[in-house]
Length: 98
Image 1: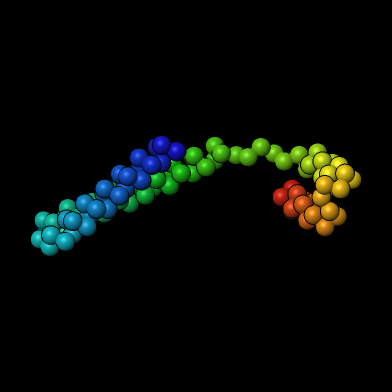
Image 2: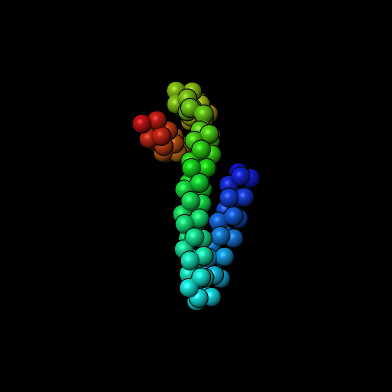
């Protein structure tokens, strides 16, 4: 997560520099702005790859639907949850399982 924040900060600085140089208006400024724009594109590619790597590492543990259904059934039998609540929670579990 820290790496993603650092790359975001770098991107912010690049975009700020691009705007400042672009507003200069000179021919040389336009060439520098084009170079910074290219760096911005490369930054976007790096940011996307980094975000993809980080999100792929955050996999959720598999849901044990059978155990959770048994627990819900016990709660319903003990009148802790109603039949309606049981049905809704069961539907959610089964939907996530698909």
